[in-house]
Image 1 (cartoon, rainbow, N blue to C red):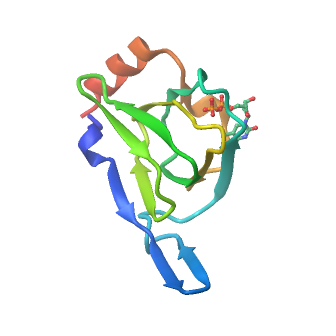
Image 2 (cartoon, rainbow, N blue to C red; image 1 turned 120 degrees about the vertical axis):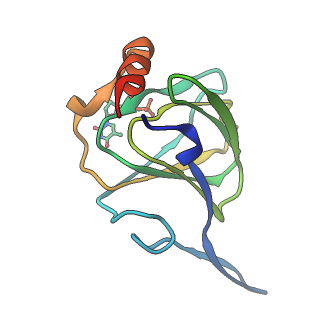
Length: 138
Ligand code: TYD
């Protein structure tokens, strides 16, 4: 069974000087997978809840580049909520974790990095089905 304690907040390498900061994410260096895809979520209504699914294959790293949002993680037994608000922190979420993103601030830009191409067939969108499937996994 995949457990939420496998999700980790990782430090992103940041090079800062008086001119500003530059953050670097390389696949298999700062995040524990090779990078195949990235997308970003922005202009989100403050009452919206995004995600609400688990992915059977994709591993993810989420970085809040601006503003803030919350990410709820659930594994079928336990849940935890992470506030993402620093562009120098990446939240690693392995596959088979249920996730919900909400309380986006108006200026929030949430970068999502993945090791898999988009495949709608790898989504589990029913929370109970997900919980059952994850609990029965060895
Ligand atoms: P969805 O996964 O529902 O977004 P969220 O988890 O943020 O609520 O995706 C929204 C739409 O975007 C849906 O029509 C599928 C499409 N989409 C792609 O075409 N490619 C992608 O890589 C992703 C993540 C979504």
